[in-house]
Image (cartoon, rainbow over all chains, first blue to last red; front, side, top):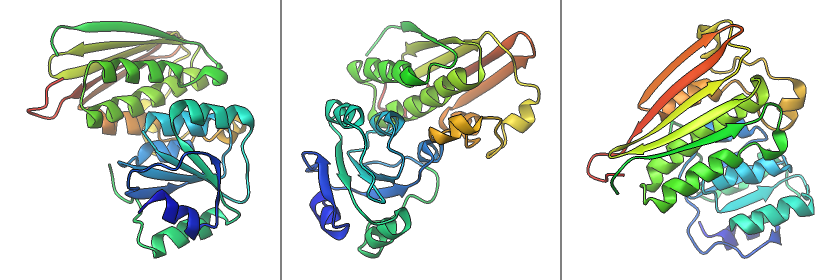
Length: 116
Length: 146
């Protein structure tokens, strides 16, 4: 799924661009970075309500090209700058984590159940 | 790629602001050396997990990286306090992390099991009052080399 389609499905706005050109293959939704680290997949979008720098650090280590902040949360400038430096696109949606994941899953973006 | 590369990274206890930097450097070294991306990800995940453990639970320690033909090795040593029950610590979901750590998105009790899952060899030794040592080897998929 293209990031532009994700943007539309989640009625999201771009907080730090540009949108990645590459296809997003799967998504993971969690506020626990420990869980995100346990199930990383290739070209994965990360949906979370955790807006601290560790979200970007975790995403960078896992080569995550797209972070979606849910529940209308907007991270601080430091976090957005970290994402820019890491080449990670950040978008924001008003949907809750559950609803945002549900929308993407229903549109055909698979989850990451099972070990990497 | 040929020849052995050895680097050592110090990790400070309680340094949440810089947690992950050592793992970022390790990932950068492996990328420069042309290590396959799937192998880099496994090493990066285990390295980040162990680095977080050093920050959260230890009195400080080091992560030593060795890149050898065919594999990547992480040897980790801390200065204590040690893990009282290793079998319990290896269980997914078991954690002694504080609420403060959980607020940062960590402390789900996945660290040690996740290191073991990502490594091809995993060995841990711990002595109370002395410290903990972890050895992890990650082999390159056959034919891709490191």
